Length: 616
Image (cartoon, rainbow, N blue to C red; front, side, top):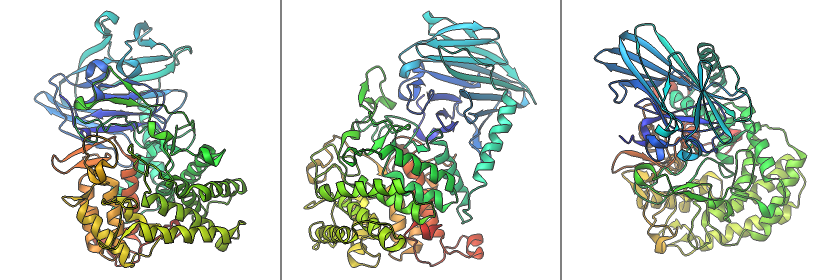
């Protein structure tokens, strides 16, 4: 049975993650990193492409599940005729190697349990060689080796039968049966496994200690903290980069071809990430993210990319895996992302804006960082008016996208403010002149006076949800009639049952050059929350925000998109952009609340913060 995307939860160790379904199956896991080949890939095929089911012999979906409060420890429970049983899943923060720990806990009765483990390396393509290693089993294929330790003896059927590792056992009240899967490079000796119960205590302490550093105390604390934990789970700890999602090729349309690999780090997330981190008190994470950003973009400004590998690598070639049919037959399955080679002018502005937010938040000014920024400005000065692919990575013809030019304006605006407000050195008069020229051109060529709205690109008949950011970045004040008109137009023309599409895929002769369509894009609806609040429609903003909270799955997770027709999550999951939108909207809506407001859940009528400095 194919599970819905929202039927999956995530556990992780700050370098990789596993997706675990309501049926107790691990159907996606890449080792040793988020962007490594998957060893469990049933999510994009079936169990023969790699899966680890652990649950009652009777099978079926769980009765309930939850994360332990303040942690990324997943607890899944089944009530079956024989009794009640709990499965505890987690990945201890990475030590020498990656570990996935699963503990079966008997609660009542005597519940027959089964485990079926099919390791398939290289995205389900390679069946490993399985051998006995003392009391453990070892599966090896090429560079990968996995050791499996369990409290019950697991049989294996050999390569000829697909190397299925399986066992059946019964648990009663108080029984705790651990399983530990540990990944190593195959040329290294295996090490003793982690002790499951000690690892559980350490993992619980780690997450609760981390989230205790949050300074957010608003009325949506549960949702904000779950989103922050999810963002932390998507962080690649060795470098500070944040993966856009833990998966590849989950479709934007069931049966369609809009399937992309999101296991990399996008620069445009910088401003949103920094805003969320510094706004909730996580200054060290913000500092680590900025350090990653500076390393990744170092070099010739002309070579700036829109995304990088989690370690900062540049080459992310896109190719198709033919042996995986895709989620519910939604092919092709893509590895890598061809958009890495696109020109997206907004990225220069968003990088400059993100570093400006870091300065405003109190992160120390770095001389090398400022020299890099001035070099980026030199490049932007010569290229801001070029046609590009836009922030949505359009694969059709390049256009003069309004958002790209607005963000180019923001890059020069932040540089002017750095000189004027912070005393940094630079050709401020030249930067101010370019900033004003961009502003005048966008207002003249990107605004449709007959409709009282900015458009997706110069001369476009379509709209774009990114136009909602015009007020947020300060290009025009929130009370400007052109901003209000744009908010109204976007809400009216891009709405599906009150949620927003990014743009109409059929507009302007199929602007993105791709077949098919897509569902509502969740971060765009959070941008609408911010825009409604900005133009003074606060009650409407709160109502939309609280509706968006109901779209989270039972574990508080959001994917990239939501299909209002079917009520299903679509796109890669969990999606960092969606959770960043949630956190930042909560910060804006909650700014200036009194303790009584917070207790009663009533939003104060306050001004919207427009910078990380105000949020912090």
